[in-house]
Image (cartoon, rainbow, N blue to C red; front, side):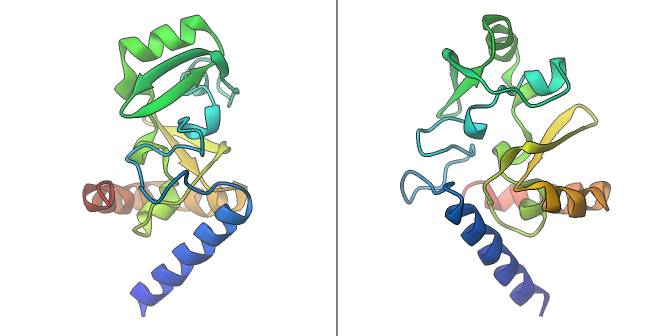
Length: 154
């Protein structure tokens, strides 16, 4: 029964995400969440979550390539911080939804639904799901970490 719920939950989330324009550019499901232009985390600056404490849209003038995706930054300084230590700034689960990952699937994200926990950036599909995830962050992280070991290559 739990597996059936998980399947329908992920289908519902993915359907909602597709309806809001977050479809993949092709049928391949990349390790890093990318929009239709192969830009990671919908063009938001991964470093700004840490340095400014908020989501900030990146500028196409400041980019870096990492793990097959283009990452955009609000400034050259943020780009340089990322290039110096990308693994510090890359969101958990390649930027896929943390709640979705806890339920075994790659679900697109809204970069404004975020939280840094123990120095790691976690993103979620929307504010409502973010609230559900925040109800048991340690439990969902433990589940998502376990799922990511197999889901990341699917």
